Structures are given as C-alpha cells and as structure tokens.
Image 1 (cartoon, rainbow, N blue to C red):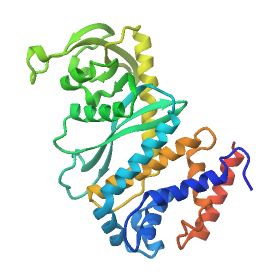
Image 2 (cartoon, helix red, strand yellow; image 1 turned 135 degrees about the vertical axis):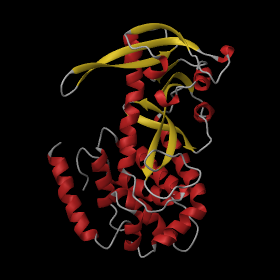
Image 3 (spheres, one colour; image 1 turned 180 degrees about the vertical axis):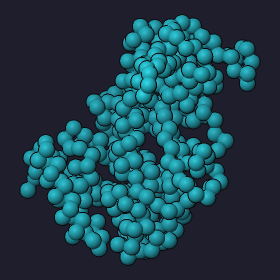
Image 4 (cartoon, one colour; image 1 turned 90 degrees about the vertical axis):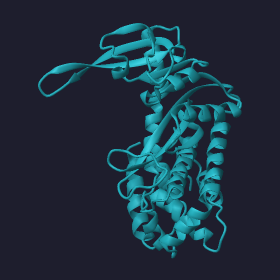
Length: 351
C-alpha cells in the first residue's frame, strides 16, 4: 500500500539500496559494516552500539573505515554532488553560500585538527546554493591546521566553477573576513559579514571603507562598501543596540543588500542542523572516521532534499527505517519499530 501524500515506497527503497552500494568497502564484513554505519545515522545512535546488533565488533568497523575510509568518503561526496546536479539541471548561474561547520569532541587532542577553547573540533567547509527551497551541496573541503581562510574559499569556488556554474553572487559569514579573502572574492559580486570590532563603526553607516590590516602592505588593502545596521537587544534590566556590519560591492540599496544576504545565507544554518540530525555518535577520535560519518550524514541530507516538500526530515528517516526491516534489523528491531510506527502515525495525524 502506498500512503497518500508521501513519496512512492519504491523510491524510498531505492535510496536504501543506493546507500548500501555507496559504502563499497572491501572485505568479508563489508555488509555488516555498511549496515552498522547507515543504521547509526538513521537511528541517531552510536556506531559502537549498532555494530553489536549486526554481530560485528566496534573495532572491526573502525578498522574498515580507517583503512578504506577516504576512498569511500570521496565516492559519497561524488554522489552528493550528482544529486545536486540532477536537481540543478539546466541552471547555469547560481548564488553561492560558503560556510564551515564544527563538530567538537571533548577529550585527548588529535594532531592535525583545528582546536577550540573546550576541546578539539573537526571542521568542514562547504559551498551550497538554494534552489526551489532546497539547499544543495556543491563543494566540500576538510579544514585542518595550517589551512588559511582564502585557501578554503579558493578551493570551494574552484570546485563549483569546475562543475560549469557561473557565480552570480557569493556570500560568506564573518569568520571569513580577511584581506586575502576580500582580494579573492572581489572578482565576483559578494556580500560578506564583517566583525564590527574590526571596523569599529558603531552607528548606522553606508559608505566607503578601506581595510587597515597590519599584516599587509598599503597597496594590498581592500576598499569596499561598508554597511552597518543595528538591532535592539532586550536585556533583563534595559534595552541596548547591537551593531552588525556587511561588506559588499553591490550597487543596491542598503535594505536590498541586507535582505539579499539573509536570503542567500540564512538557509545554510538550517541545512547544517538537518545534516547533524543524521550524524551518528562515535568514540573514535580518528579524523578519517569522523569525516566519513559526517559525509554520510551529509549524503542522507542530500537524499532527503529530493523529497523535501513531500515529506519532513523525521518522516523521511522513519520511512527508511520502516521500509527496511530486512536491511536494518538490529536485535531490538521489534521494540524500536513499534515505537517508530506510533511516532510516524502521530506525525501523519498532524499533517
């Protein structure tokens, strides 16, 4: 029976088989390893917990990923790009949003990773575009120690242009505000968030501004149009104004520039939350392991975007689980599927 208003079950089932085929590890336990990883994503559980349900040790799963993980990760990323290209078929010019996301692990330091104040962080930068309500991944890069912000931006932009797209507008958040990044993106139409503390303009402003970086010569400084605006912040005892800044080379009204930035940039925050909703837990501190499960979650989100508008994220997750008792069959499946079915019915009743 096909449930009215939902994607056809054959389409959902095809996704499950595609997921298994994408995790093309080599070895005797390949099927158990693939099912463990996908099941952990779908149940939002730990890889170690799900491995036991498939009669494979956590260490075996780690061994497969640590030895073959980078090859599998590249194939997963290629699949995510293909999904985006299929949706963008016929589109030549796009608005591009560049950002990075951080997953923090609290524990022993791991060499080669960016660090945060409270622990170690795995950082991933992406380039995405929004099309017909869908946030689509176009480029991805691992961010490791020693990599500069302009290098990250250049690699992502090069990946996007290599796909044949013309960039109509590029937007970046304040974390990318550097002279080198500004010099590079000045070849495009751009809007980038600016730390107000860097420009030290604490009033409504719309005018020319030139950087004054001490790390760069005078002829390397960048001139741009600076927009500063304020928002009222309500505290416990009093109200105060908080200032925000944007740099751009667009010849539009101040309001149009700010609205355009929010339109292009805003959806990426939601997409990262959706990606992390598919992200499983793990005790592994290996960079390759953390990267693979993040990319796997990213692919699941990309597959979900195909049906966005027809089905919600949680409905998509639960439909995959319900339609694959033969593929994702942990020891406690009977209990979990009843709990899932009750929740799914409740979701449908609210539609």
